[in-house]
Image (cartoon, rainbow, N blue to C red; front, side):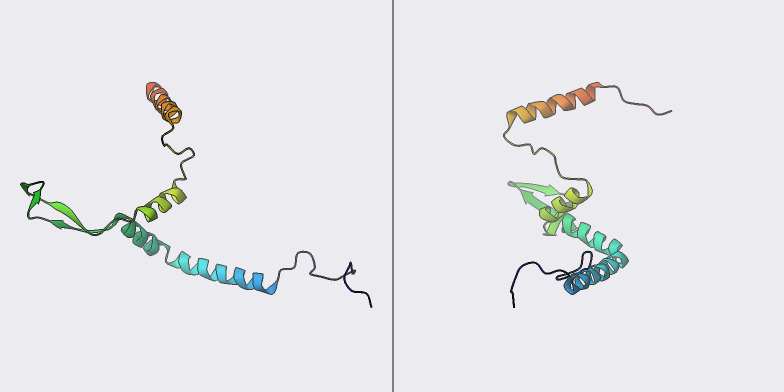
Length: 125
């Protein structure tokens, strides 16, 4: 009896999905439905975490040896910069060209900004 090689009609039929793939798709749909129901509270919680947890303090405090009286914001939990970056990247989009030590890129950016600012504003009628 020959082993291996081409056998007509053998294997998975085209367009048919494996049982594991179907289970994963069902789980994904369930997760999407659950998140969809709680989307607003989840987004509010993510924004709160990105902004950090703070309280306002209305006492006299020292700053560099000088006394100040007034209201200041005291963070109990620092803002989550990574989460904020992730949210901005997803909703606004990632920066196409990062600005770094590239002096030519910085010159190009300043030229583009100057060009935009020099154009008259469009008015709508």
